Amino acid sequence: MNDDKLLKIIDELHIYEKKVLKGLESAGYEATPEEIVESQKMDIKSVMSAAGILESRGLIKVQKDVKDILSLTDDGQTYAKQGLPERNILKVLGEKNSIPMTDIGKESGLEPNEVKIAIGWIIRKKWALIDKGIVKITEDGKKALDTDFNDEQLLKTLLEMQQLLLFEPSKIIKNGYNLLKQRKGILSVKKDVKYRLKVTKEGKKVLKQGVDLTYTATQLTHAQLKTGSWKSLKFRSYDINAEHPETFPGKIHPLTRIIEEIRDVFLNMGFTESSGNILESAFWNFDCLFQPQDHAAREMQDTFYIKNPKHSKLPDDQLVKRVSDVHENGGTTESEGWQYTWDREVAKQSVLRTHTTCVSARFLSEYKPPLKMFSVGRVFRRETITYKHLPEFHQVEGIVAAEDINYKNLLGIIEEFYHKLGFKVRFRPAYFPYTYLSTECEIYLPEKGSWIELGGSGMFRPEVLEPLGVETPVLAFGLGIERLAMLKLGITDIRMLYKSDIGWLRKLPVTDGVKLN
Image 1 (cartoon, helix red, strand yellow):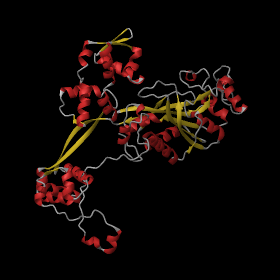
Image 2 (image 1 turned 30 degrees about the vertical axis):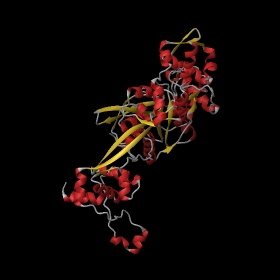
Image 3 (image 1 turned 60 degrees about the vertical axis):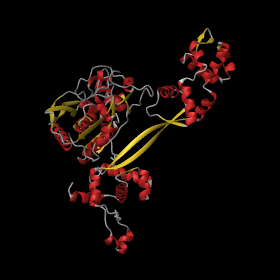
Image 4 (image 1 turned 180 degrees about the horizontal axis):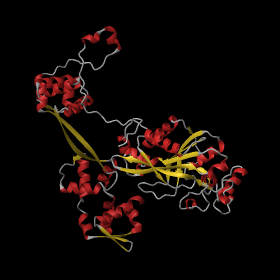
Protein backbone atom coordinates (compact mmCIF):
# COMPACT_ATOMS: atom_id res chain seq x y z
CA MET A 1 0.00 0.00 0.00
CA ASN A 2 1.64 3.28 -1.13
CA ASP A 3 1.67 6.54 0.82
CA ASP A 4 -1.01 8.18 -1.33
CA LYS A 5 -3.42 5.34 -0.69
CA LEU A 6 -2.65 5.41 3.04
CA LEU A 7 -3.33 9.15 3.18
CA LYS A 8 -6.58 8.69 1.29
CA ILE A 9 -7.73 6.01 3.77
CA ILE A 10 -6.80 8.18 6.75
CA ASP A 11 -8.60 11.17 5.24
CA GLU A 12 -11.79 9.11 4.87
CA LEU A 13 -11.80 7.85 8.47
CA HIS A 14 -14.44 9.13 10.88
CA ILE A 15 -13.22 10.59 14.16
CA TYR A 16 -14.62 7.53 16.02
CA GLU A 17 -12.72 5.18 13.72
CA LYS A 18 -9.52 7.12 14.32
CA LYS A 19 -10.04 7.00 18.10
CA VAL A 20 -10.58 3.24 18.04
CA LEU A 21 -7.36 2.78 16.06
CA LYS A 22 -5.44 5.02 18.46
CA GLY A 23 -6.89 3.15 21.43
CA LEU A 24 -5.77 -0.15 19.96
CA GLU A 25 -2.33 1.28 19.28
CA SER A 26 -1.88 2.32 22.89
CA ALA A 27 -3.14 -1.10 24.07
CA GLY A 28 -0.55 -3.00 22.05
CA TYR A 29 -2.71 -3.43 18.91
CA GLU A 30 -5.24 -5.66 20.65
CA ALA A 31 -8.05 -4.92 23.13
CA THR A 32 -11.67 -5.54 24.03
CA PRO A 33 -14.37 -2.98 23.11
CA GLU A 34 -14.84 -2.27 26.80
CA GLU A 35 -11.15 -1.35 27.13
CA ILE A 36 -11.47 1.06 24.18
CA VAL A 37 -14.55 2.60 25.80
CA GLU A 38 -12.51 3.25 28.94
CA SER A 39 -9.37 4.59 27.22
CA GLN A 40 -11.07 6.74 24.57
CA LYS A 41 -14.08 7.90 26.60
CA MET A 42 -16.53 6.61 24.01
CA ASP A 43 -19.79 4.70 24.39
CA ILE A 44 -19.90 1.01 23.46
CA LYS A 45 -22.29 1.56 20.56
CA SER A 46 -19.93 4.02 18.87
CA VAL A 47 -16.96 1.70 19.41
CA MET A 48 -18.72 -1.32 17.88
CA SER A 49 -20.01 0.74 14.95
CA ALA A 50 -16.54 2.10 14.22
CA ALA A 51 -15.02 -1.39 14.63
CA GLY A 52 -17.40 -2.79 12.03
CA ILE A 53 -16.37 -0.14 9.51
CA LEU A 54 -12.68 -0.58 10.27
CA GLU A 55 -13.01 -4.32 9.75
CA SER A 56 -14.75 -3.77 6.38
CA ARG A 57 -11.73 -1.63 5.40
CA GLY A 58 -9.36 -4.40 6.44
CA LEU A 59 -7.70 -2.32 9.17
CA ILE A 60 -8.74 -4.45 12.15
CA LYS A 61 -10.04 -7.93 12.82
CA VAL A 62 -13.07 -8.40 15.09
CA GLN A 63 -12.92 -11.73 16.90
CA LYS A 64 -16.22 -13.00 18.27
CA ASP A 65 -16.48 -15.56 21.07
CA VAL A 66 -20.00 -16.85 21.77
CA LYS A 67 -20.79 -19.03 24.79
CA ASP A 68 -24.11 -20.48 25.93
CA ILE A 69 -24.86 -19.77 29.59
CA LEU A 70 -27.19 -22.29 31.27
CA SER A 71 -29.26 -21.40 34.34
CA LEU A 72 -32.52 -22.32 36.07
CA THR A 73 -35.84 -20.54 35.75
CA ASP A 74 -38.07 -20.06 38.78
CA ASP A 75 -39.84 -23.35 38.03
CA GLY A 76 -36.46 -25.01 37.56
CA GLN A 77 -35.33 -23.88 41.02
CA THR A 78 -38.54 -25.26 42.52
CA TYR A 79 -37.94 -28.66 40.93
CA ALA A 80 -34.29 -28.59 42.03
CA LYS A 81 -35.38 -28.06 45.65
CA GLN A 82 -38.51 -30.23 45.79
CA GLY A 83 -37.68 -32.87 43.19
CA LEU A 84 -39.14 -33.70 39.77
CA PRO A 85 -42.76 -35.03 39.74
CA GLU A 86 -41.69 -38.57 38.76
CA ARG A 87 -39.31 -38.67 41.76
CA ASN A 88 -42.31 -38.08 44.05
CA ILE A 89 -44.11 -41.05 42.51
CA LEU A 90 -40.96 -43.21 42.76
CA LYS A 91 -40.70 -42.49 46.50
CA VAL A 92 -44.23 -43.78 47.03
CA LEU A 93 -43.55 -46.84 44.87
CA GLY A 94 -40.42 -47.51 46.94
CA GLU A 95 -42.69 -47.94 49.95
CA LYS A 96 -45.66 -49.73 48.34
CA ASN A 97 -44.19 -51.33 45.18
CA SER A 98 -47.44 -50.62 43.24
CA ILE A 99 -50.18 -48.01 43.14
CA PRO A 100 -53.49 -47.94 41.20
CA MET A 101 -53.42 -45.28 38.49
CA THR A 102 -56.44 -43.61 40.06
CA ASP A 103 -54.57 -43.10 43.35
CA ILE A 104 -51.34 -41.63 41.94
CA GLY A 105 -52.27 -38.01 42.57
CA LYS A 106 -53.46 -38.57 46.12
CA GLU A 107 -50.49 -40.78 47.10
CA SER A 108 -47.78 -38.56 45.55
CA GLY A 109 -49.32 -35.18 46.35
CA LEU A 110 -49.16 -34.10 42.69
CA GLU A 111 -51.66 -31.89 40.94
CA PRO A 112 -53.85 -33.60 38.27
CA ASN A 113 -52.01 -31.78 35.46
CA GLU A 114 -48.64 -33.04 36.81
CA VAL A 115 -49.69 -36.68 37.16
CA LYS A 116 -49.93 -37.38 33.43
CA ILE A 117 -46.53 -35.80 32.76
CA ALA A 118 -44.91 -37.61 35.69
CA ILE A 119 -46.30 -41.01 34.59
CA GLY A 120 -44.84 -40.44 31.11
CA TRP A 121 -41.40 -39.66 32.50
CA ILE A 122 -41.31 -42.49 35.07
CA ILE A 123 -42.11 -44.98 32.31
CA ARG A 124 -39.56 -43.35 30.00
CA LYS A 125 -36.86 -43.63 32.68
CA LYS A 126 -37.84 -47.30 33.16
CA TRP A 127 -38.50 -46.74 36.86
CA ALA A 128 -41.99 -48.26 36.60
CA LEU A 129 -44.42 -50.01 34.30
CA ILE A 130 -48.20 -50.06 34.01
CA ASP A 131 -50.02 -53.39 34.20
CA LYS A 132 -53.83 -53.39 33.97
CA GLY A 133 -54.16 -49.94 35.49
CA ILE A 134 -51.58 -50.60 38.22
CA VAL A 135 -48.28 -48.69 38.32
CA LYS A 136 -45.50 -51.07 39.47
CA ILE A 137 -41.89 -50.31 40.39
CA THR A 138 -39.16 -51.95 38.27
CA GLU A 139 -35.65 -53.11 39.22
CA ASP A 140 -34.28 -49.94 37.61
CA GLY A 141 -36.69 -47.97 39.76
CA LYS A 142 -35.46 -49.67 42.95
CA LYS A 143 -31.86 -48.85 42.01
CA ALA A 144 -32.84 -45.23 41.32
CA LEU A 145 -34.33 -44.75 44.79
CA ASP A 146 -30.94 -43.74 46.18
CA THR A 147 -29.40 -42.37 42.97
CA ASP A 148 -30.07 -39.12 41.14
CA PHE A 149 -30.78 -39.35 37.43
CA ASN A 150 -28.74 -37.18 35.02
CA ASP A 151 -31.40 -34.45 34.83
CA GLU A 152 -31.69 -34.37 38.63
CA GLN A 153 -27.93 -34.10 39.01
CA LEU A 154 -27.90 -31.13 36.60
CA LEU A 155 -30.71 -29.44 38.52
CA LYS A 156 -28.79 -29.69 41.79
CA THR A 157 -25.55 -28.50 40.17
CA LEU A 158 -27.28 -25.45 38.69
CA LEU A 159 -28.99 -24.71 41.99
CA GLU A 160 -25.59 -24.68 43.69
CA MET A 161 -23.54 -22.91 40.98
CA GLN A 162 -26.33 -20.66 39.58
CA GLN A 163 -25.07 -21.07 35.98
CA LEU A 164 -22.93 -23.27 33.74
CA LEU A 165 -21.17 -22.87 30.41
CA LEU A 166 -22.42 -25.23 27.73
CA PHE A 167 -18.91 -25.71 26.34
CA GLU A 168 -17.66 -29.27 26.04
CA PRO A 169 -19.94 -30.36 28.93
CA SER A 170 -19.44 -33.64 30.77
CA LYS A 171 -21.51 -36.64 29.71
CA ILE A 172 -23.74 -36.36 32.77
CA ILE A 173 -24.43 -32.65 32.19
CA LYS A 174 -25.00 -33.20 28.48
CA ASN A 175 -27.46 -36.06 29.06
CA GLY A 176 -29.22 -34.13 31.80
CA TYR A 177 -29.48 -31.05 29.56
CA ASN A 178 -30.96 -33.10 26.69
CA LEU A 179 -33.65 -34.40 29.07
CA LEU A 180 -34.49 -31.09 30.76
CA LYS A 181 -34.66 -29.06 27.55
CA GLN A 182 -37.60 -31.27 26.52
CA ARG A 183 -39.53 -29.81 29.46
CA LYS A 184 -40.70 -26.25 28.98
CA GLY A 185 -39.86 -23.54 31.47
CA ILE A 186 -37.10 -25.28 33.47
CA LEU A 187 -33.88 -24.15 31.80
CA SER A 188 -32.78 -20.77 30.54
CA VAL A 189 -30.08 -20.57 27.87
CA LYS A 190 -28.54 -17.18 27.14
CA LYS A 191 -25.72 -16.37 24.77
CA ASP A 192 -22.69 -14.60 26.19
CA VAL A 193 -20.88 -12.78 23.39
CA LYS A 194 -17.36 -11.44 23.86
CA TYR A 195 -15.53 -9.36 21.24
CA ARG A 196 -11.83 -8.71 20.82
CA LEU A 197 -10.38 -6.15 18.42
CA LYS A 198 -7.02 -6.76 16.77
CA VAL A 199 -5.14 -4.45 14.36
CA THR A 200 -4.18 -6.02 11.03
CA LYS A 201 -0.97 -5.43 9.05
CA GLU A 202 -2.76 -2.82 6.95
CA GLY A 203 -4.01 -1.14 10.11
CA LYS A 204 -0.50 -0.96 11.51
CA LYS A 205 0.65 0.72 8.28
CA VAL A 206 -2.07 3.35 8.69
CA LEU A 207 -1.07 3.96 12.32
CA LYS A 208 2.59 4.18 11.33
CA GLN A 209 1.68 6.81 8.71
CA GLY A 210 0.04 8.82 11.47
CA VAL A 211 -3.60 9.29 12.50
CA ASP A 212 -4.58 12.85 13.44
CA LEU A 213 -7.49 13.14 15.88
CA THR A 214 -8.35 16.66 14.71
CA TYR A 215 -12.10 17.04 14.21
CA THR A 216 -13.19 16.82 10.56
CA ALA A 217 -16.53 18.24 9.42
CA THR A 218 -18.96 16.21 7.37
CA GLN A 219 -21.53 18.90 6.61
CA LEU A 220 -22.02 22.65 6.67
CA THR A 221 -24.38 24.43 9.04
CA HIS A 222 -26.24 27.68 8.51
CA ALA A 223 -24.20 29.32 11.29
CA GLN A 224 -20.88 28.29 9.70
CA LEU A 225 -21.93 29.75 6.36
CA LYS A 226 -23.17 32.96 7.98
CA THR A 227 -20.07 33.59 10.12
CA GLY A 228 -17.54 32.32 7.59
CA SER A 229 -16.10 29.80 10.06
CA TRP A 230 -16.40 27.11 7.40
CA LYS A 231 -13.22 28.48 5.82
CA SER A 232 -11.09 27.12 8.66
CA LEU A 233 -12.78 23.73 8.84
CA LYS A 234 -11.08 20.51 7.79
CA PHE A 235 -13.52 18.39 5.83
CA ARG A 236 -13.61 14.62 5.85
CA SER A 237 -13.44 12.81 2.51
CA TYR A 238 -16.12 10.29 1.58
CA ASP A 239 -15.45 6.77 0.36
CA ILE A 240 -17.82 6.32 -2.54
CA ASN A 241 -17.00 2.60 -2.63
CA ALA A 242 -17.97 2.01 0.99
CA GLU A 243 -20.55 -0.69 1.71
CA HIS A 244 -24.09 0.50 2.23
CA PRO A 245 -27.41 -1.17 3.02
CA GLU A 246 -29.39 -2.21 -0.04
CA THR A 247 -32.66 -0.33 -0.39
CA PHE A 248 -35.75 -1.37 -2.31
CA PRO A 249 -37.94 1.62 -3.23
CA GLY A 250 -41.63 1.22 -3.91
CA LYS A 251 -42.59 0.77 -7.54
CA ILE A 252 -45.57 0.11 -9.76
CA HIS A 253 -46.25 -3.56 -10.46
CA PRO A 254 -44.83 -4.46 -13.90
CA LEU A 255 -48.20 -5.65 -15.23
CA THR A 256 -49.87 -2.40 -14.18
CA ARG A 257 -47.00 -0.46 -15.75
CA ILE A 258 -47.43 -2.25 -19.09
CA ILE A 259 -51.19 -1.62 -19.01
CA GLU A 260 -50.49 2.07 -18.45
CA GLU A 261 -48.00 2.04 -21.33
CA ILE A 262 -50.65 0.53 -23.63
CA ARG A 263 -53.19 3.07 -22.42
CA ASP A 264 -50.80 5.93 -23.18
CA VAL A 265 -50.19 4.61 -26.72
CA PHE A 266 -53.91 4.56 -27.52
CA LEU A 267 -54.58 7.97 -25.96
CA ASN A 268 -51.71 9.48 -27.94
CA MET A 269 -53.20 7.95 -31.11
CA GLY A 270 -56.44 9.87 -30.46
CA PHE A 271 -58.57 7.05 -29.03
CA THR A 272 -61.25 7.48 -26.36
CA GLU A 273 -61.17 5.06 -23.44
CA SER A 274 -64.27 3.16 -22.38
CA SER A 275 -64.96 0.51 -19.77
CA GLY A 276 -67.64 -2.07 -19.15
CA ASN A 277 -69.02 -4.49 -16.62
CA ILE A 278 -67.18 -7.66 -15.64
CA LEU A 279 -70.59 -9.29 -15.14
CA GLU A 280 -72.30 -9.28 -18.52
CA SER A 281 -75.31 -10.82 -20.20
CA ALA A 282 -74.86 -13.51 -22.83
CA PHE A 283 -76.67 -11.11 -25.17
CA TRP A 284 -73.85 -8.55 -25.19
CA ASN A 285 -71.06 -11.10 -24.74
CA PHE A 286 -72.20 -13.51 -27.49
CA ASP A 287 -75.51 -12.82 -29.29
CA CYS A 288 -74.84 -9.22 -30.26
CA LEU A 289 -71.56 -10.38 -31.82
CA PHE A 290 -73.36 -12.88 -34.06
CA GLN A 291 -72.11 -15.87 -32.09
CA PRO A 292 -74.70 -18.70 -32.35
CA GLN A 293 -76.31 -19.96 -29.16
CA ASP A 294 -74.98 -23.47 -29.77
CA HIS A 295 -71.39 -22.27 -30.28
CA ALA A 296 -68.77 -24.32 -28.40
CA ALA A 297 -67.42 -21.23 -26.62
CA ARG A 298 -70.73 -20.91 -24.77
CA GLU A 299 -70.38 -24.32 -23.12
CA MET A 300 -69.76 -24.56 -19.37
CA GLN A 301 -66.27 -25.82 -20.19
CA ASP A 302 -65.33 -22.43 -21.67
CA THR A 303 -67.51 -19.84 -19.92
CA PHE A 304 -68.22 -18.96 -16.28
CA TYR A 305 -72.00 -18.74 -15.77
CA ILE A 306 -73.29 -16.88 -12.72
CA LYS A 307 -75.87 -18.36 -10.30
CA ASN A 308 -76.78 -15.08 -8.66
CA PRO A 309 -77.99 -13.11 -10.52
CA LYS A 310 -78.78 -15.95 -12.90
CA HIS A 311 -80.28 -13.61 -15.51
CA SER A 312 -79.38 -10.12 -16.71
CA LYS A 313 -81.59 -7.44 -18.15
CA LEU A 314 -81.76 -7.24 -21.95
CA PRO A 315 -81.68 -3.91 -23.85
CA ASP A 316 -84.75 -2.44 -25.62
CA ASP A 317 -87.01 -4.85 -27.51
CA GLN A 318 -86.20 -3.36 -30.92
CA LEU A 319 -82.47 -4.15 -30.61
CA VAL A 320 -83.24 -7.61 -29.24
CA LYS A 321 -85.62 -8.25 -32.18
CA ARG A 322 -83.00 -7.16 -34.74
CA VAL A 323 -80.37 -9.43 -33.18
CA SER A 324 -82.89 -12.29 -33.08
CA ASP A 325 -83.74 -11.86 -36.78
CA VAL A 326 -80.05 -11.78 -37.77
CA HIS A 327 -79.47 -15.06 -35.94
CA GLU A 328 -82.52 -16.78 -37.36
CA ASN A 329 -82.51 -15.62 -40.99
CA GLY A 330 -79.94 -12.86 -41.45
CA GLY A 331 -82.47 -10.01 -41.01
CA THR A 332 -81.85 -7.22 -43.53
CA THR A 333 -78.16 -8.08 -44.07
CA GLU A 334 -78.77 -10.43 -47.03
CA SER A 335 -77.16 -13.14 -44.88
CA GLU A 336 -78.85 -16.48 -44.20
CA GLY A 337 -78.17 -16.19 -40.47
CA TRP A 338 -77.70 -19.37 -38.48
CA GLN A 339 -81.08 -20.88 -39.39
CA TYR A 340 -82.31 -21.78 -35.88
CA THR A 341 -84.87 -20.46 -33.41
CA TRP A 342 -83.18 -17.86 -31.25
CA ASP A 343 -83.91 -18.23 -27.50
CA ARG A 344 -84.41 -15.06 -25.46
CA GLU A 345 -83.79 -16.91 -22.17
CA VAL A 346 -80.37 -18.06 -23.29
CA ALA A 347 -79.45 -14.47 -24.13
CA LYS A 348 -80.45 -13.37 -20.62
CA GLN A 349 -77.92 -15.68 -18.92
CA SER A 350 -75.38 -13.92 -16.70
CA VAL A 351 -71.72 -14.62 -17.49
CA LEU A 352 -68.31 -13.32 -16.58
CA ARG A 353 -67.28 -11.64 -19.80
CA THR A 354 -65.01 -13.80 -21.93
CA HIS A 355 -63.60 -10.85 -23.89
CA THR A 356 -63.75 -7.06 -23.94
CA THR A 357 -65.44 -7.03 -27.38
CA CYS A 358 -68.75 -6.72 -25.54
CA VAL A 359 -67.55 -3.23 -24.48
CA SER A 360 -67.12 -2.35 -28.16
CA ALA A 361 -70.64 -3.59 -28.95
CA ARG A 362 -72.19 -1.51 -26.20
CA PHE A 363 -70.16 1.55 -27.27
CA LEU A 364 -71.36 1.24 -30.87
CA SER A 365 -74.97 1.03 -29.66
CA GLU A 366 -74.60 4.29 -27.71
CA TYR A 367 -72.37 6.49 -29.90
CA LYS A 368 -72.52 7.40 -33.58
CA PRO A 369 -69.49 7.27 -35.90
CA PRO A 370 -66.96 8.63 -36.56
CA LEU A 371 -65.29 7.30 -33.41
CA LYS A 372 -62.11 5.71 -32.07
CA MET A 373 -62.44 3.75 -28.82
CA PHE A 374 -60.32 1.36 -26.77
CA SER A 375 -60.88 -0.48 -23.50
CA VAL A 376 -58.65 -2.40 -21.09
CA GLY A 377 -60.09 -4.86 -18.63
CA ARG A 378 -60.16 -8.30 -17.09
CA VAL A 379 -61.79 -11.22 -18.86
CA PHE A 380 -62.55 -14.76 -17.68
CA ARG A 381 -62.42 -18.17 -19.33
CA ARG A 382 -62.49 -21.69 -17.93
CA GLU A 383 -58.84 -22.38 -18.69
CA THR A 384 -56.57 -24.88 -16.95
CA ILE A 385 -53.78 -22.96 -15.23
CA THR A 386 -50.47 -23.56 -17.01
CA TYR A 387 -47.29 -21.62 -17.74
CA LYS A 388 -49.13 -19.78 -20.56
CA HIS A 389 -52.83 -19.92 -19.58
CA LEU A 390 -54.86 -18.37 -16.77
CA PRO A 391 -58.63 -18.38 -16.12
CA GLU A 392 -58.47 -14.64 -15.49
CA PHE A 393 -56.39 -12.22 -17.56
CA HIS A 394 -56.40 -8.75 -19.13
CA GLN A 395 -57.40 -7.87 -22.65
CA VAL A 396 -57.22 -4.65 -24.64
CA GLU A 397 -59.81 -3.96 -27.32
CA GLY A 398 -59.97 -1.21 -29.93
CA ILE A 399 -62.44 -0.10 -32.65
CA VAL A 400 -62.47 2.61 -35.28
CA ALA A 401 -65.68 3.54 -37.13
CA ALA A 402 -65.81 6.02 -40.02
CA GLU A 403 -66.87 6.43 -43.64
CA ASP A 404 -64.54 4.87 -46.21
CA ILE A 405 -62.41 3.15 -43.55
CA ASN A 406 -61.06 -0.16 -44.82
CA TYR A 407 -58.89 -3.18 -44.13
CA LYS A 408 -55.67 -1.34 -45.02
CA ASN A 409 -56.45 1.23 -42.36
CA LEU A 410 -56.84 -1.62 -39.86
CA LEU A 411 -53.39 -3.00 -40.68
CA GLY A 412 -51.85 0.47 -40.52
CA ILE A 413 -53.30 1.24 -37.07
CA ILE A 414 -52.18 -2.10 -35.64
CA GLU A 415 -48.73 -1.74 -37.12
CA GLU A 416 -48.38 1.72 -35.60
CA PHE A 417 -49.61 0.47 -32.21
CA TYR A 418 -47.05 -2.34 -32.02
CA HIS A 419 -44.33 -0.06 -33.36
CA LYS A 420 -44.90 2.32 -30.44
CA LEU A 421 -44.49 -0.64 -28.08
CA GLY A 422 -41.20 -1.54 -29.74
CA PHE A 423 -42.27 -4.52 -31.86
CA LYS A 424 -42.12 -5.42 -35.52
CA VAL A 425 -45.46 -6.93 -36.64
CA ARG A 426 -46.73 -9.09 -39.48
CA PHE A 427 -50.22 -10.42 -40.34
CA ARG A 428 -51.72 -13.74 -41.42
CA PRO A 429 -55.31 -14.73 -42.28
CA ALA A 430 -57.56 -16.00 -39.47
CA TYR A 431 -61.23 -16.65 -38.61
CA PHE A 432 -63.34 -14.99 -35.92
CA PRO A 433 -67.16 -15.32 -35.63
CA TYR A 434 -67.87 -11.58 -35.67
CA THR A 435 -65.36 -10.25 -38.22
CA TYR A 436 -64.57 -10.87 -41.86
CA LEU A 437 -61.23 -10.20 -43.53
CA SER A 438 -59.95 -11.38 -40.16
CA THR A 439 -56.28 -11.51 -39.32
CA GLU A 440 -53.95 -12.53 -36.52
CA CYS A 441 -51.05 -10.27 -35.53
CA GLU A 442 -47.62 -11.74 -34.97
CA ILE A 443 -44.61 -9.94 -33.53
CA TYR A 444 -40.96 -10.74 -34.11
CA LEU A 445 -38.58 -11.60 -31.28
CA PRO A 446 -34.98 -10.92 -32.38
CA GLU A 447 -33.41 -12.85 -29.48
CA LYS A 448 -35.45 -15.96 -30.35
CA GLY A 449 -35.40 -15.45 -34.10
CA SER A 450 -39.10 -16.31 -34.36
CA TRP A 451 -42.61 -14.85 -34.63
CA ILE A 452 -45.33 -15.21 -31.96
CA GLU A 453 -49.08 -14.59 -32.21
CA LEU A 454 -50.39 -11.92 -29.84
CA GLY A 455 -53.82 -10.76 -31.00
CA GLY A 456 -56.65 -10.88 -33.47
CA SER A 457 -58.37 -8.26 -35.62
CA GLY A 458 -60.77 -7.74 -38.49
CA MET A 459 -63.70 -5.75 -39.91
CA PHE A 460 -67.00 -6.21 -38.04
CA ARG A 461 -69.52 -8.24 -40.02
CA PRO A 462 -72.79 -6.63 -41.18
CA GLU A 463 -74.61 -9.09 -38.89
CA VAL A 464 -72.94 -7.31 -35.95
CA LEU A 465 -73.30 -3.73 -37.18
CA GLU A 466 -76.82 -3.52 -38.68
CA PRO A 467 -78.71 -4.55 -35.50
CA LEU A 468 -76.73 -1.82 -33.67
CA GLY A 469 -77.78 0.76 -36.27
CA VAL A 470 -74.21 1.32 -37.51
CA GLU A 471 -73.99 2.00 -41.25
CA THR A 472 -70.26 2.75 -41.54
CA PRO A 473 -67.43 0.19 -41.63
CA VAL A 474 -65.89 -0.65 -38.26
CA LEU A 475 -62.46 -2.16 -37.75
CA ALA A 476 -61.69 -4.00 -34.49
CA PHE A 477 -58.62 -5.49 -32.83
CA GLY A 478 -57.61 -6.94 -29.47
CA LEU A 479 -54.82 -8.70 -27.66
CA GLY A 480 -54.06 -10.44 -24.37
CA ILE A 481 -51.89 -8.22 -22.20
CA GLU A 482 -50.31 -10.94 -20.01
CA ARG A 483 -48.68 -12.61 -23.00
CA LEU A 484 -47.29 -9.26 -24.13
CA ALA A 485 -46.04 -8.67 -20.57
CA MET A 486 -44.24 -12.01 -20.60
CA LEU A 487 -42.33 -10.96 -23.70
CA LYS A 488 -41.49 -7.49 -22.44
CA LEU A 489 -40.36 -8.75 -19.03
CA GLY A 490 -38.47 -11.77 -20.35
CA ILE A 491 -40.37 -14.40 -18.30
CA THR A 492 -41.46 -17.85 -19.47
CA ASP A 493 -44.27 -18.54 -16.98
CA ILE A 494 -47.39 -16.34 -17.00
CA ARG A 495 -48.03 -17.20 -13.34
CA MET A 496 -44.98 -15.14 -12.37
CA LEU A 497 -47.07 -12.00 -12.96
CA TYR A 498 -49.34 -12.94 -10.04
CA LYS A 499 -46.99 -14.80 -7.67
CA SER A 500 -45.77 -11.65 -5.88
CA ASP A 501 -42.21 -13.01 -5.99
CA ILE A 502 -40.52 -10.29 -3.94
CA GLY A 503 -37.04 -11.17 -5.22
CA TRP A 504 -38.09 -10.87 -8.86
CA LEU A 505 -40.08 -7.67 -8.26
CA ARG A 506 -37.13 -6.01 -6.49
CA LYS A 507 -34.85 -6.63 -9.46
CA LEU A 508 -37.18 -4.92 -11.95
CA PRO A 509 -36.34 -1.33 -12.90
CA VAL A 510 -38.22 1.58 -11.36
CA THR A 511 -38.35 3.55 -14.60
CA ASP A 512 -41.64 3.98 -16.46
CA GLY A 513 -40.52 2.16 -19.58
CA VAL A 514 -40.06 -1.63 -19.52
CA LYS A 515 -37.28 -2.54 -21.93
CA LEU A 516 -37.60 -5.56 -24.17
CA ASN A 517 -34.99 -8.16 -23.17
